[in-house]
Structures are given as structure tokens and as C-alpha cells.
Length: 558
Image: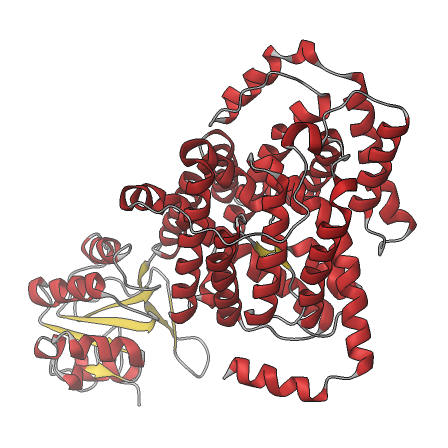
């Protein structure tokens, strides 16, 4: 239905809209061209693999995605995980992992999991994003310094030691090109934010290196240049044993891709006042990642920076993303001979700036300064695992830690002895130390969800109470929003083993009452002892003890 509505929307497509989309497509293509090559090189594959991904993936995702202005292509989020896949399984393994991730994204879309991404804790997101930024920056140190003889390793500390071993091979020419690129990347946006800073920086650096005849590695000298032709169809070599080994990597790619793409959609919604469809976006990204490997492209996702450029450039519809892909294709076919002169140090300078912006250090600083220490622990552990191990470990561990902390927080169930405050015209039920010696009634207020993390606390809270033994027990359940199987079992245990003659429940919420009935607890506590409020429970408990007028501590309340 979503895609049908999108097709109907094109009936009102005007020339003014076409012009706005076309101009935005040109600007985004100029921004995306050097970045796509940079990320491919950072991963450890030829630069054209990044171009193929941006062209094919950008086109497919623009057509089938759930956002009007989202731009898809290679992003920094994938660099760490994809470089590890290339080292272990080669380029063919990378293509298979991307294909598997695409299938997982389509499954997530069909299962309507698009909204679940919003539940990933903020410290985890900032943690792996910062970790990825650190990995991208350090992976480019060799290229920025012009080091030679470097051997790429799987782990961060190994690569860092490799850099130290070869520091003596640095090149002043490469350092000059790097610094020039970084300066231009920082200065150009201050002149005009709509200018393609990356393209200008790379072009100027390449021109300076050519005029001054600087001895620096270029795309041509390192990779033999990029092909001046359309990508050919290629069927990845798939083995069952390889697929099994690639499952963790494919899952990490799918999770990262969905997070970044949907975050990109949220950013574009805020800039354009349009609303994206999360599940359609996952489907578009899934189809794009299924198609891209057959043309030799690396995995893709929604790119926040390029999407922001697209929105700011006046894009109106998804055709801007289509134009961006087609214009990149034309640029590759026409400008390939010129691209061959681009120094690797220039692309390293681009990625240095990209990684710095990606790290969002101000968010890290705010978390370290203001967040709870448990959230800080999740942040730091996620960063360290991302840097020193890999994303297939850091994301699950970060999510698990955050979940455990969350469960600990909400499991702080209160089982509070409760009495009546007699002041004023209306009785109020509050936690005090009065009336706890009554041998007729014990009243407890249960506060919080009664689930597996809190069930034992619920039982121990009643067993360890300082209240005097009484004939009847009243449990005030107003503040219990949910109950699971473990909580139901704890309640059953209390009803079956209690020393109280009668147990009453008051203010039981509807979903909790339904769960109790479904679990068969109505056999242990009659329906007439589940009351609408605590006053009714007190009246019934006293009357069933033959105290028609109440007792010394409690009176019948009309």
C-alpha cells in the first residue's frame, strides 16, 4: 500500500519539483563520489567497489525505501566490520555477507521490526559510533603519513603496532597533501555549506600534487585506476560453510545498517517535515543490499551526512536519490581518468575529518559528565569492545549490559507496609510506621512491575516485614502495571503457603487481572476478594472476621 501511495503521488510531479530534485541530485553526487571511494579503500577493497555500491545501492534504495530524501551508499559505520570480513574471508566473503544482511533486513521489514530500532539504548549507539570513528581514523594514519610496507591485521592493537614499526617510512609529500585536504574540508563549509567540501578538497590536493610532482601514492599507482565502464553482473561464490561463519558479521551489518538508515530518516524528517515509513525503509535497504553484491558493491545504508545535504539542497521526492545515483554513474564513466590521479593521502584526510565528525565527542563528554555511572560503564565498555575486539561482540554485549541494568532498575520493587492517614476528611493510604501492630490486618502496597527480575524481592519483602502477624493480608496492586509468568508463580506461592487466613487484592489493573485469571489463580483467591479499592478490602476483611464495627486500629469506612 505504501508503494502504491508513492506512485499516486507522482501524478502531481511538476517541473519545479523535477528541477529541485535534479539540482539536489547533482550536489549530493559531488559529495558522495570521493567519500564512496574513501570508504572502499578503508575497508581494503578497490575504490570502484564503493562507487558501484553508491550507484546501484543508491538507486535501488531510493526507489524502494521508506523516505523521500534518504540517500544510500557506503558509510563509516561499516568500515570496522567490513574490513574484518575482508581480512578473514576475502572480497567474495564480503559480497556474501552483504547479501545475507540484505535478506535479514527484508525479513525485519516483513516482521515489522522497524520501530524496534528506537529501543536501542543511547549509550550503546554512541559507544559503537565513537568506537567506529576511532577505528576509521587510526586505519588512515598509514595513508596520511605515507607509510610503506604496512600489513593489515584484524585487531586494533596489532595495526597500531604495525604503524609504529614503519614510522620511519613517512613521506613529507603525503603529510602535506593530508594537511591540505583537512584544511579544505574544514574551511570550505564555512564559506558555503552547499559546496561539496570533500570533492573540492580532493580535487585541489590532487592538482597540487600533480603540479608539484609530489611523490605520493595515487589510486592509479595503488589499484591500477578505476574502470571506465558499467559494473558487470557477478554471482558471488557461496558455500554453506562460509555462510555459517558469516552469520555474526551479516547480523552486525544488518543491525548497523538499520540503525544508521533509520536515524538518517529521522534526521531528514526533521528537516523536511515529512514522515518516513520505517518498515518500508528496511525493505528498501534490504533489496539494495541483495542487489549490490551481484555488481561487486560493498554493503550500503542510509548516509546521514549525504541525506542532510540532499534535504538542504532542496530535494522534494525520492527522485533526487535516483538522480544522485545516475549522475555518479556518468561521473565515473566520464571522469575515471582524472580520478586516477587522486592521492590516497587526500582520501585519508577526508576520512580523518569524517571520523572526527562521526565521533560526536560532545555527546560522549555529556554522557561522561552527567549520566548515571552504569550508563557510563555501558558507554565505555561498548567503545573498548568496538575498538579492541569487533562490532559482532560490542553490540550484543552493550545491549545485554544495558538490558540487565534496565531490568535491575525496574526490578526495584517496593513491598511497603501501608497504613491509613486519619488527618483530613478523606482517609489516605501512605507508607508510615503506625498501625503496624494490628493483629487483624496487614496492608502492603506493591510498587513496580511484578516480573522475573522482581519476583524474589516480592516474596522476601513480605516474609521479612516488620509488621506484626495478622489474620488477613491486603495487597494494594494499583502500582503493578504488568506481571509475567515468574511474577504469577510468586503470587501463587504466597497464596498457597501464606500463614494469613484470608488474602485480599485491591486496585488490580486490567491486564494483571486477566493474566491472573488465565494462570488459574482464581482457584486460590475468590473473585469477591479482588476489590476495586482498599476501603472495600478493609471493610470485607474486618466483616469476615466478625468485626462489623471495625477494631481499635481500623474502622469500617463507608
